[in-house]
Length: 316
Length: 199
Image (cartoon, rainbow over all chains, first blue to last red; front, side, top):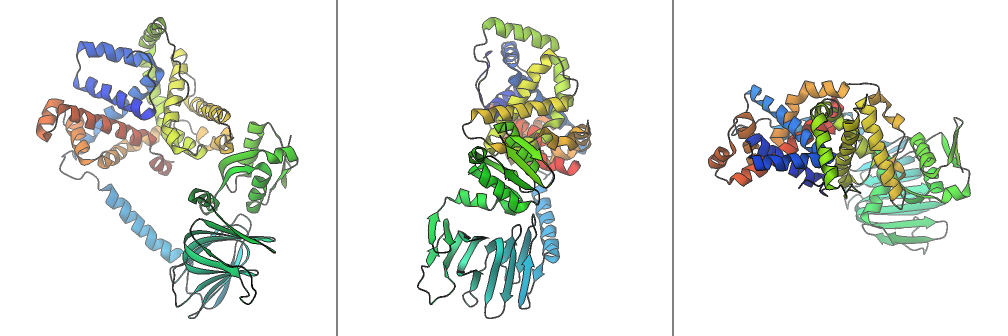
């Protein structure tokens, strides 16, 4: 027992708690020696034990509150949290852009911006950085034009009022869904997270392919091509990182990572060296934290970082 | 949890034992007074900088072990920078050991400048609402576990008597109490959500 054991934190804590419980309740001499040896064996043991012991000694103070009767609910914390959430929800609904859109409206975000639009029917659209949409909500139709950028749609299905997103020459018709649409110059990407949607050409007379998208499908269209791939749900979650203010990289070349950052920030990242641009990274960053990204690239890859205010240039 | 010194000899262990006995109370005081109050900040740091959440508890444990190992030779002058530097080094080493570079693992330590500039802030926050935290922790325990903890810690009932009153084995009482100890420590020291409100 005296040699340090290979335990993960949970096992080690359980062992430390075991000893604390025994010492607290009084243990025999044999056990005392065993405990001393255990405690002496590793600083990890001492850290775990002292931490629990300290918290446990604080716990006796609870007696002062006189709320110790086991049958009484001490603090209905869950109820409190629920109450707070309810209040927040009510305030949120009042404060949010809760719109009964008259007819046509336009919404946009600037670089680094993010906006959520809630509609009267319960549908929501979240706009990522540098994005512009127009909406037309009437009793007969629900149509959104994505003029640039990226948006995440959570649509309440209503067969009487089909929901259509129009992006350039393409059209996405919702069949009750959550989906992400990203428009870059010359390229359109639609990722479907839940439900079903049809993706095809705007001009129905054109004999162009259309696809029924199912969860996990990612459709990519360029000027003349369209293809659909299926991605694991985890990867799609990464693409939605921006909804929480983060960018997720998964084996992303540094050059691509820089372009991704540049969507969100006025100060631009420039990878000046093609070799450096090919280094791949995995990680999660705050969309606005270019400096942390540059600092990490510097310390991990031994790259040179020059910051002149407008640009951060990364090179070997 | 990475490599630990496995080949401690018998003599080595005894020597450590003697050292620990000499300095233990001073180091323990320091650890409880200076290091544990930093736990919420440490957990926040680890959560922000490491994606695999299942590693974090092990990291905390490893960081504490390294901090104590150093403190048993000489207590650092300032606990906070020392703990953070230890955390940062651990993350960097982990990153270097992995094949793919997790670039998010090592933001600048400067990013934590705000907390670095307020010595003792965490400590007073803990002292201030220790009761509130403990109440919350206690309330979150499973009912049987809570009952055992209250009887033991607050009412001072011996284990055998708790077993009799609750109609369970002594061994089970001990398990409940051990689980309660771990849960109380996690909330008292590590509850990052509550700490954030205290800043």
